Image 1: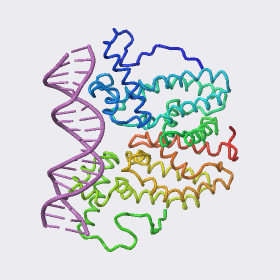
Image 2 (image 1 turned 90 degrees about the vertical axis):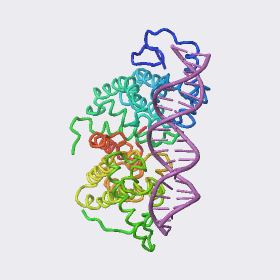
Image 3 (image 1 turned 45 degrees about the vertical axis):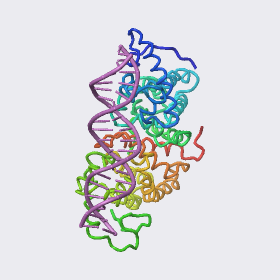
Image 4 (image 1 turned 60 degrees about the vertical axis):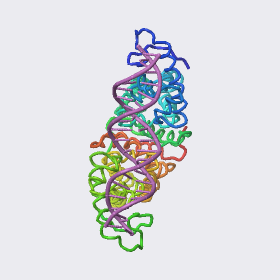
Length: 208
Length: 208
DNA sequence: ACCTGAACACCGTTCAAGT
DNA sequence: ACCTGAACACCGTTCAAGT
């Protein structure tokens, strides 16, 4: 499990590539906010009231909106590490397993990521403006990782070639939608069925 | 396409099995409300403001809550015909096609049902109390229909036997979650992949 | 620069008063 | 019996006033 700290461009609204440091109190508030949000998300889901997060962090609501204009910014900030870890796990899996197995194992990581955090899946697919941009960050990190795995499996003739990485990412997080907070078991099973579907007919023309 | 009008027990809260008729104005309000709700759902989704529906129907909000205590009651009432039509389509499909094809074609109906109506899928999987009981009605009607098709396909050795009808119903409506209002095309494709997964390994022990 | 919190808009839900 | 709509609770979001 390696994870190189690559600099990303679309990254945190709290620390653009080359920006002068924030004022001390601002930086402190952001840290406290992230911690509070993480705790609240864990016990009440990602669409818990903003006021609750603000109170927990001991700041005014205005401060939350100042640093995180969109709820999705807060969510992305809280789960960035997890998302990155998932993306970065791909190369190791590809090296250690056959193409399809690597794909399947990576999907387990993704399912765990999405299904474990209460309501994360819902946030990924909400059409409310407050969640806008969150799927974008996810795709930006996860899409390249998955594409690699998918192409390897396709090249190996193990899976069909007419399903795009982003479609799969979307389908899988959709399947995690009704998973209960703790158990991702049921979702994981359905994802395995979906993956089996990828290799049912590896040819491009899918019958019917 | 036949559809016998079977009497259901868990049915409409507006007309229990053996109840004296409603007062004329009450019945009229219910009809208007259903019509208004249908229109509003179509253009603004199933979680449009209650007030909008009430206004459209020319009644007070209290009247909406009197007849439809839960939002899901209103949704179920509005889409009952569509749900029943989908369920009742199963026998004809089973008679006209081979087991797997019948299953696939029925799924197309279900996908159309769920993906077409804006936000219907979301309502099916929401954990908010206002939507409670809606999945129950859907399952009650659709589960038996699907089970029939699934068992036939299983008996014919075309699909694996370790996926329950209700799981499939759930997985498919989840896949329809991020479908745009009009097009169910993308969702339909993923559902087809899922179905292919069902027949990838028809044996019970689905590898690892 | 940054923070605070009152204020506003909006929505679900109830219930006292009416008919 | 049934209807109405004011009233309440709750939540997102903004912005004038403060430091």
